[in-house]
Length: 381
Length: 249
Image 1: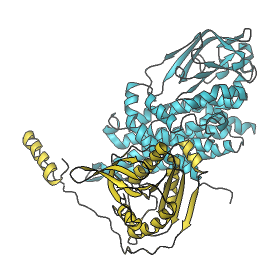
Image 2: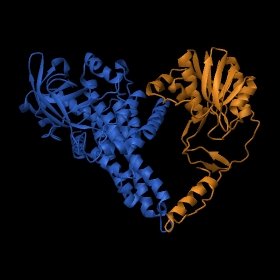
Image 3: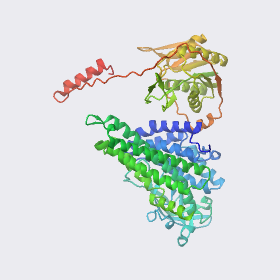
Image 4: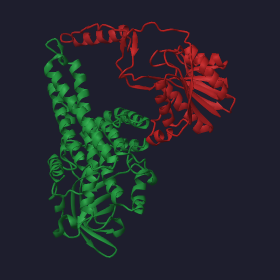
C-alpha cells in the first residue's frame, strides 16, 4: 500500500488557488501581453500578493518552502493560463535554485530574503551566443582581482535578466580547464559594468522578457561566489536537473489547455449537420491528447516525488521535460487542426499554445540534450 | 467583538450537473465556497481587521464542506466550526441547528450569503434571524458599525436601496457590491492548517425531504434574423426581441 496518488488538503487548496488565479488573472490578459511583448508586472505583483511567486524559498528566509510536488501542481495551473507568464515565475526559481543548492546561510539570507519582501525576480545566466548545449564552452571570463572577480563577456537568452534583483552568472576563471574552471557568481541588479538588452521578436512566450547580458569590467565581490571556484558547472547542471521538472509541469498545463479548448470547440462546431466531436477523426485526436496529458502528468509527478525523496532523479527530470514538452507540442498542433481555419487565427487561443510550447522543447536543455542525459543514465548504470 | 460568517459549499458555476437515480450527482464536479458566502466571509474578516476581535466561519453540511471552511481560513478567518450533517437539510432546519451554536458563541453579528448558488434559496439568513430572535438586513451592500450595539447598513430593494439602523446582534445577508473578496493566499493556506476547525457531529431531521431532482432543459428557439436584405430593420428587430422577449436589455 505504499503508492498513493492523493494530494494533501493544503495541496488541494494550492491547486484551487492557482487554478482560480490562472483563470481570473492570467488567461484574460495572456493574449494582450503576448501581442505587446511586454512583462505583465500587474500580474507578477498579484502573484506575489497571493504568495505564489518565489514560493520555493524556504520559510527561514521568508518564503514558503514549496516541495517539488507543490511546484508541479502550481506550474500546471499557471501555465494553463499562459506559458509565457509562467516562465517568468519559473525562471525566477531557476535563479534561486543555485543559491539554495550552494549558497551559505548568509548568502541565502542576503539574496533570497529580498525576493520574498516585494514582487521581484531572480535570473540564471548560463547560455552565451557561442554556447548553448555545450555549456562548458562558455567564454565569459572571471578574473580574480583583490577581494572579488572582474567579469567580461556576454550571456544570451536570459529570462528575467534585466528585471531580476540578481542574476547567477556562470563564468570561467580558466577556459582551458573547461567545466572545471567554472564559477557561479551572483551579480546584483545595478552592478557597474553590467548591462541588459531586451531581445525582441520571439515566436512565443512573449510575455516573458528575454535578455542579452553584457559584462564589461564588472566587479563582483568574492562574497557573491556560490560554492568554490570550479564548482560552477556542476552547480549549473544540478540546478537544471531540478528545474526541468517545472518545465514539464508547464507543458502539462499547456497540453491540458489544448485539450480543453479542443473539446469545447469540437462540441460546438458543426459540420455535415452534427458537432464535429461526433466524428471519429476528431475523437481520436482528443483521445491521443488525453493519453499524452495523463501520462506526462503522472510521470512529472513521479519525477517531482523522486526529487522530494532526495532520490536520484536527473534521468527522470530529463524524461519528464522532454516527454511532456513533446506531447504538449503535439496537443497544441492537433488543437489547431481541430479548430481548422479558426485555429490559425489569434482570435482563438490555440495558435499561441503552439508558439509558446515550442520553447519548452528548447530551453533548460534541448530535448536532444535530455536524450543524451537519459542515454548516459542507461549506459552508465 | 466577534463576527460570524455562515457559509456553504456549492458546485462551481461552470459545473455540468448530471442526474443519477433521481438525484443530482456531484461526482467529478468542482466544489467551491459559494460566491455570495464569500462576500460574507470577506466582510467579517474586514470587520475584524477594522475593529479587532475574532472572525469565525461556520457551516452546516456534509464532511466535504470542510474544504470551503479551509478556504475561508486561508482568506484570513480565525477559526471554524463545522456542524457535520450528511444529506439534504432544508434551510429552516439548518437555521435552527446553527442558531444553537451561534447563541453559544454570542457574536456581535452574523453574515451569510443572500442567495445560495445551488438551490437558489434565500431563506437561510432570515431563518437564522428568526431562530435567534434577532433583526435581519437582507441584500446588504454596505455595513458600518456604530459602537458595539448598533450598525448602519445599506441594502438593496427591488427598485432602489434603503439605509437602515439595527441593534446588534443582528443577521445580515450579502449582495453584489458589498466588497471585493480577497484571494486566499498560499501563506494563508499554510497557516490555515494550524487554525482550529471544530467538528460537531449532528443528526438532523430535515423538515423537507427531497424525493426527486430533475434538471431543467430548454430547447433553443433557433430564431434566425436575416440581415442580408435590410440590416437596419434586422437590427431593430433584434433589439426588440432582446428587450421584449429575452429581457436582457
